[in-house]
Length: 357
Image 1 (cartoon, helix red, strand yellow):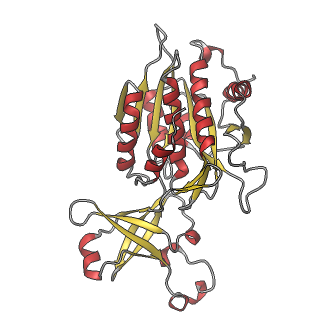
Image 2 (cartoon, one colour):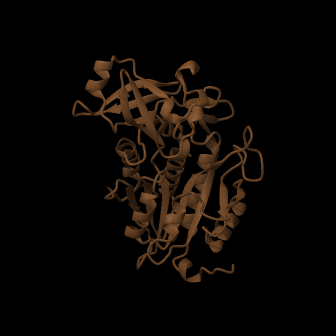
């Protein structure tokens, strides 16, 4: 199996905040183009790749969704040489002070990357009611090192800010960096596409790097509606065991993907994927999802007439921070399981799917 780490690191070093995914979409397109038959951008910026099945007749199709967008920030005001920001997607302001960021400045008419850090004002400069607790996002500042005049000449209100933490290899084949949610899953889908080069699959495959999952599930809704697949699977991250997160709802790093079970998931699909993982001796765990999964799966499941869906989760520690962490072998196992599932689909699979099995 090819080493996916170099590609993953390139994903973690590329911007693509929710609603502004163009830089990372270009990178993924370059990687996927040799692996598929067709590739295009949707009207809202999701990357859609098609790999033709081998059945000589009317072929069913499966859509695999992995969102490529990331949480980030947006400039709301410029005060002297400092920038105030708001969030795009879910951000915990407690982890921001000291974080390196990139301001994608547009005032000059072309995008210029300005590197900066998130700064926290001195406690005595903060309102008394928050001086002894976590500092909210609207009180934090981004310092690019520019003078007030230079900042005003380069930065627009509404400019996007992305994390700039460099990916780091840790012990135990673990990698840390920003945006592993959900670039780790894009890497897993890439592994699946590479595995399918040597496998026969009867079904057509739609590999989709969706846009705007972190904000409105936009790519999940629109891609599923456009493609109308017979089945849909989301690959996303899930919560790994870590400090303060060691209960039944978290999963260990390096012990394989999770297979979600609950009303957002078709029970027959869960059983087929779970049984396949057992046969292949791929480590995995059941993840109980008693309601909305918080992924593109919800959007896909309720699109058009309704689509049978499933979710694979890659355990991730420190979600929605600049130092997220995953085990590389969990990415590889997830990709392999997805490829094996696709290649095992019978042409009449959808006709035999039932709710009580």
